[in-house]
Amino acid sequence: MVKRRNLLLAGVGGATLFAAWRYSLPAASAADQIFKVAHTDAEWRKMLTPQQYAVLRREGTERPYSSPLNDEHRAGTFACAGCQLQLFASGTKFDSGTGWPSFWKPLEGAVGEITDRTLGMSRTAVNCAQCGGHLGHVFDDGPKPTGLRYCMNGVALTFASRAT
Image 1 (tube, rainbow, N blue to C red):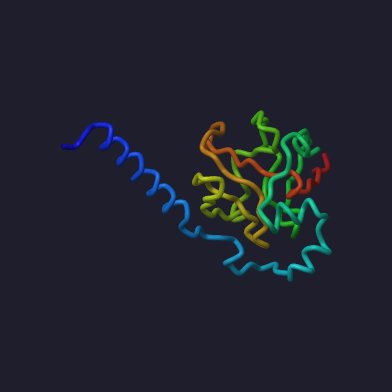
Image 2 (cartoon, helix red, strand yellow):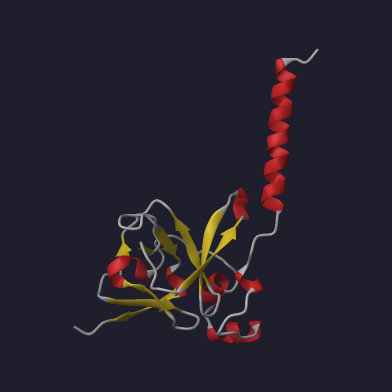
């Protein structure tokens, strides 16, 4: 005779096994792609600061509220710290309250997106379309008009102000 408790335990066990299997599947990686700007690992290490290398090339994350770009409000453009491709216009930046520079829209063709299954969840990682550098993640809790929040690591970005 099947007891309700055994049925419940079997269901929980099955769901746990399914989740473990699903998140163990290999996700696409920017490292698997060919980009216009490419360097060897040694060249990237020479070109970037240790913190930039950890984020851009090893998909790390900087501490929240640690980037001066979080408080950057001048007119200008945010670019990739690895290759200087322009990524975001300052007019799309907003204060998300998360501690990382956030934008509601990238420049056309500036970023790529891949599935990130680290930390036991599925989310969308954002990389530079030109060099593949990891920039951060995009979430669907941003402001209008897109409803998106591109939550970027400030260390992965540079800023150039626009002359007024």
